[in-house]
Amino acid sequence: MKSAMRPRGHRLRVSLFVLVFPACGSIVMPAWAKPAKSETRAMKREANADDPGAKSKKRDDATDAASGKPSPADAQARVLNRLRDRLEVSDDTEWSLITERLAKIEEIRRSLWSSSGGGRGALPGAEKAKRSSGSSANPERDALRTAVGDNLTVAEIKSRLARAHDVQAQNEARLAQAQAELRAVVSVRQEAVLVMAGLLPP
Image 1: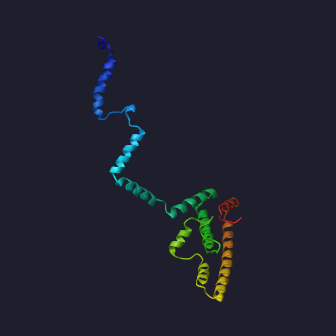
Image 2 (image 1 turned 45 degrees about the horizontal axis):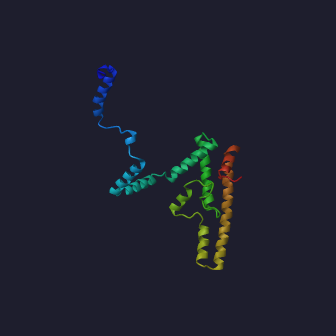
Image 3 (image 1 turned 90 degrees about the vertical axis):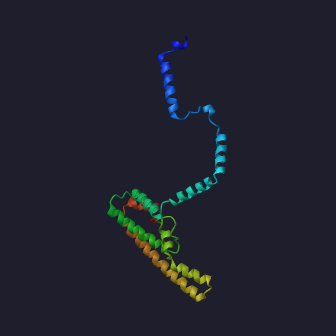
């Protein structure tokens, strides 16, 4: 008697449940019926043990991800774009002039005895490009290293030292000139930004 007195809405919900639930093809597991985390981890370990290729696949994926790293040219472009933003250069002609003079400074810096080409203020990718080309940034350094390593005569070592001293003085003068040329095309604020970036001396 009580069942006959149930509201119509209740019977409608029961009917919809009977019709729709089998069509879903899956059962929503209640929270209390889900496996514990420890059980889940144990099942994963068993699955990996059954599939020895799972770990190697993970390593292969990592290798593929590593091979997708940006190239040095991309890194240099990002650094230059950030520098352009800091210098607030909107005109392409002005920016082209600045980057041209920056590149000249970097080229001379790599030829200096005290510079390794990869320190603060160096444009990214420049040292790597130099190594890949097989050229030496400082042939006088190489010549002196060879003289010492091969135990050449004192006269030869002295000659190469003198040559290294002369070339270093010339390169320092060239660098000072290139820095003056860069200062001539930037504002006082831009010069301060370049000094803070290590691209110009104070």
